[in-house]
Each structure stands twice: as structure tokens, then as C-alpha cells.
Length: 157
Image (cartoon, rainbow, N blue to C red; front, side, top):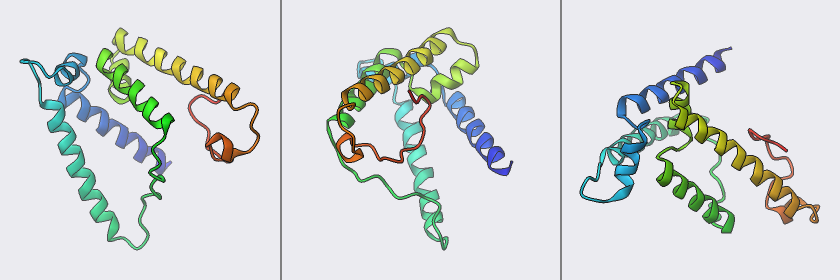
């Protein structure tokens, strides 16, 4: 129960921060990404504040006997990572939404955010379907690039 309350409080704090900073407004995000005369640097300031808070938490966490942070990923940059980042960036630029602000906006019953979330879930499902079909011929996890004991995702098809 304690874990659930901490997760809820963390999500509420994150959502509240997104609303207070105006990051749930897609026009503000698109104004940052456009780099025109109407460029809005507020996203840069929000990101800078988030990096500063994260750096502080990492520093405090390092003082504990057993750090809570998990082992970082391998740092391997491959085609899947580059393609996924590109798709994310194009979608973010076109819609002005990324998953966090979209969930907050959908909670406020904003139709564009709800449509975005439906499209995002459909895209994840399509990825899982295509990846499973592409990898159906290979049986070992080392060939697929996925760990054999991989954790369940939002959509496991």
C-alpha cells in the first residue's frame, strides 16, 4: 500500500508540475521546437530544472549504503534506438504531445490528447505485432535483442 501511495504522489507531483509549467499545452511545445521568431524557451527552462532536481537526487542517493537506482542500460546505440527516437521526435513535433503531458491532458478530457493516446497505444501494438513476426524465425533471445525474461509491457501481444 505504501508503494502505491508513493507512486500516486509521484505521479500527482509530476502531473501538477506539467500543468503549472504549461507543458500540457501542445502549442507551447511546438513553439519551442519551431525555432522561429516566436520561439518559446520555457520547455528548455523546465528541462533544465528537471535535470537539476535529478542531479540532486542522484547525489543524495549516492550517499546511501545501497543506492536505489537500478543498473543503467548498456548504452548500446543501434538502429532500433535511432528509429524509435526519430519516430518519437516526429510525433512530438507534429502533435506537441509526449506521453506524460498527453496522459495529464487526457485526464482533463481534452479530445486531442485522448486521440493521441489511442494512436500511441495502437502504434505500440503494431510494433509488437511486427517485431514478433520479424523475429518468429529466431528462437534465442540473443538473436532478437530482447532479454528472454523481459518484463511485461503495457501491451504484450
